Image 1: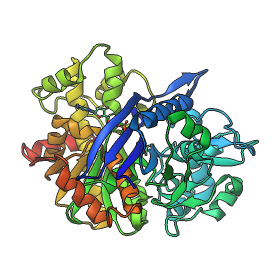
Image 2: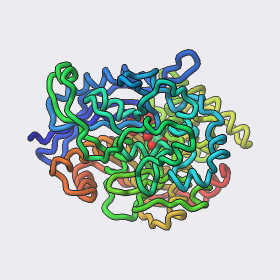
Image 3: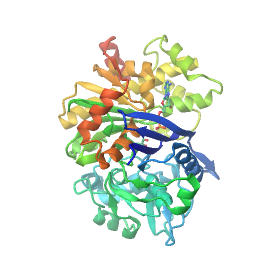
Image 4: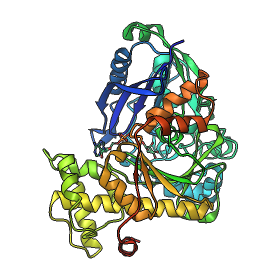
Length: 470
Ligand code: ADP
Ligand code: LRH
């Protein structure tokens, strides 16, 4: 058996097929990277799922033969299949507005407290539960979350991987099985939800036509298919006293716990209890993340991220900050205009240059990280000595430094490809090459370049800025 594994990792801003080699330490190479993002068609926002699938096949062809393949992606979104297994319609993007008002309606009918006690999930307008209730389900036989849909196309096998299923709002957080009474109460067909799979379980062999197309064959293995679950599995923590910020299109900030926190205070703070590998719970809140910066860059054709970050580093601190989680920032659109409007609404002078906008975005995000980490600590009672910042955001030195200063805690940045590491290490564990979660983490800590940022700066100024947006 070779010690090579392929990870298909679909992020909201880019997808990649990565090749990991464990024959001598842990080496990662990129077989293929491709852009991803929303496509608006006739007023509705979609993913280009077939385009993504084609890129995945290109990536697998480039990667060459491996021991196994794992697939992860962003959470909550899905494809519906008919009885024959054909895709019914194109998967809708979670930033589409078709779920407007649905969460409020479900909270009224099913009871917000009951929903939280059942699923432990934070209320986000795009949770699968709300999307399904806004969708036309006639003719639908099966609902497959995105990695499960890709897995089905690769192997012909149906299933629902549990870490991602925990983001639907329809999984019982205590038993980690589908919440059948809730599904029934909402009038959703129970048959839509396929049997659950655990990370590490076999999915199946590649279909013969797929193997012919990429030129080789290998089994697909279930991994922690929610990208955030894989990323947190790969946090290079050396003890339990850590918080994490998985920072890409979203910032997912919180702590890892042995069980859920389902208190009224936790619900009021909109904290989520997502399923991690080996029974762990990701206790976190979504912070709007680098989406804010991505959408600013889209509004400034020709702008260079590296140049902007260099200039932003010497911009005046705290000139303007916004609450990064303003619901108005969620859909695609002119982000600088929305940020400027939010500054005006809160009595602050809007930034005047792109670099000043970038400074405003990064300070605002750092404040979002601080609030989520502090609340996670308070609500869970978990001690935190260090914040691990993983994902593409770990390449942003200014953001890492601001996060350390805002939290008043050291930040250890990296790896940027944490999700891929989590994906391949679960496969390597199934192959008997790694023992457990602790060994996965120490392997990453020992083999990957990490950067440590000690908190510095004016703690009082951060308190003042935090008060401005609370
Ligand atoms: P996702 O998985 O959600 O698609 P990633 O984890 O790939 O997101 O992170 C993408 C983000 O990482 C980009 O939007 C960008 O802000 C940031 N990023 C990537 N590379 C760099 C870099 N070299 N310098 C600064 N920021 C970077
Ligand atoms: C990050 C992520 C996050 C979800 C969001 C939809 O990519 O999976 O954990 O909340 O996408």
